Amino acid sequence: MTTLTFEHVSKYFDRSDGTEIRRIAAVDNVSLKVASGDVLAILGPSGCGKSTLLRLAAGIFKPDSGRVIYDDQDLQDVPLRERGVGMVFQEGALVPHWVTRRSVGFFLELRQRESEMPERLAQISRITGFGLDVLLERRPGNLSGGEQQRVSIARALSRDMRVLLFDEPFANLDAKYRTEARVELKRLLNAFPVTSIYVTHDQIEAIALSHRIAVMRDGKLEQVGTYPQLYSNPVNIFVATFIGTPIMNLFPGHVENGCWHGENFGGYPIRNDLPDGTKVTAGIRPEYIHLASDGTYGVVEQAVPYFAERHQVITVHLAGERWSFVVPLHETIEVGSTIRCALDPAGLLFFDSKTGQRIG
Image 1 (cartoon, rainbow, N blue to C red):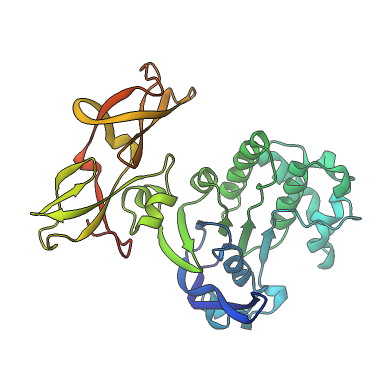
Image 2 (cartoon, one colour):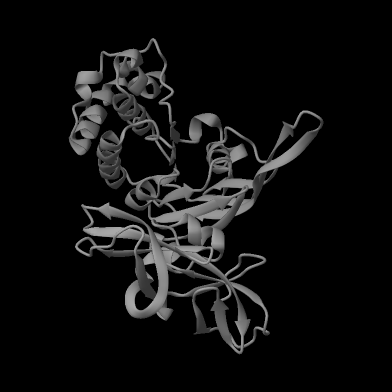
């Protein structure tokens, strides 16, 4: 297996806005190490540079600055035949007139190793639990979206891999097939431990498949860690609100006499080195807000039941602020009613309102 390292990697593209051409950093000075056998998920909004970073890892794009390193060798110095990159795209990217057998076995065919294919296919079918053999004589036009992605993954796994890359492979599948595909892929990644990067916008997918998650924004890495680390200790407001469902509640406020005060909540101790008047935004996850007879009043705007989880998400508004929290499903809470709720100080995080950076 291979350790994949990005050393201060940047990639630029020229974009025209109709009047002038601007140089945009799709990936901006990214440094990151993916250890041998690790599975890293990359999360971020559309256009943040996730797919560009993946293509840099594959050698499809060449960095404008910095290096991509396989173990201790610059990727640009590794011959194409020796890179050992398997890649699975969102749309499958299968050759339209090739049957599955040839798509999956093409790598081995080029190397005159066709005799290895039956065992490779049997192994993949055995691990995933679906019969790949029934798809072998079909062309992509005769395969469902889920079947095309299974063939794409099998094709990648038929190679002598050092690195396996996924670019939102299940984005076009409906919810049922996405769930099945995640389970199948997890089995494969356990059975074929290979250094992997998985680009997705789906947090559930990232949690289910990866060891660590990297959050990107505007071409930069914001934070890298396990999901619990990102959820509990975000470095800034962007990560705090991007990770977690329902999203973190934010309350603008200021520092006064060593405490944070906002519009509807306040009096919570904060760092004593912040001068009075400092603008600070308080953040708190929905599970740290609860009903309280002596709490702050709010008008119920929405009550959304989640039957499988046995809870409901309540959204409340007051004085221009909104916040959401979770209560048991059996609680009767009507839209338009007035309730009282309080914050648990143990769940409060504080952010600099100007920079968005975590300060407490």
